[in-house]
Length: 162
Image 1 (tube, rainbow, N blue to C red):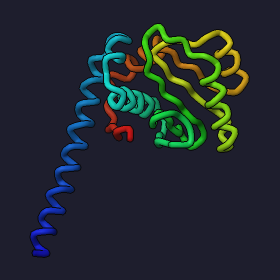
Image 2 (cartoon, rainbow, N blue to C red):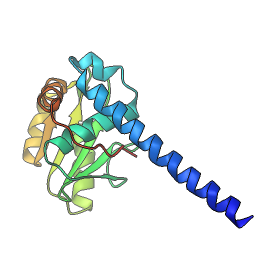
Image 3 (cartoon, rainbow, N blue to C red):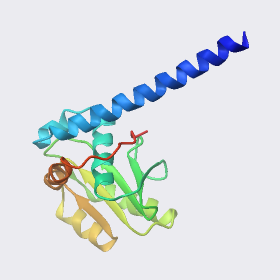
Image 4 (tube, rainbow, N blue to C red):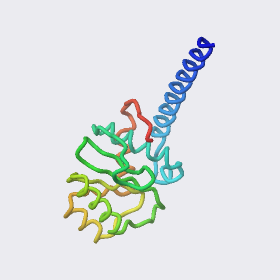
């Protein structure tokens, strides 16, 4: 009976590793074919987050998921010194200053002094001013697309977003 449970446990671990590898491959293949913001828009949120995590990793960031900032698992810690919040709304969605204020409050509460907001849309001018004053980088949909295109030829193993 113990042997049966041991075999079952090993089989389950192999299944999880295989599933993880297949997902990493899926994300790498999706990243290769992103040519427009619409390609990012039609991804589900998990794949969208994983694509952004992969892009950031290929740009040299060390990434961890966090619940200290972000809504519904959209928060990341970059290089242990920067909070990042990922938003997936419509292409014409304009990010208001309240979102940046919430991120700044999370940063202050956790003694993090740099931030980043990534969205498919764009930012209101007042949001950009607030972010500049609070050392929060604003990455809009066009910049995100350019980042994706810049790393499409680079191969790095993806850790899925959780």
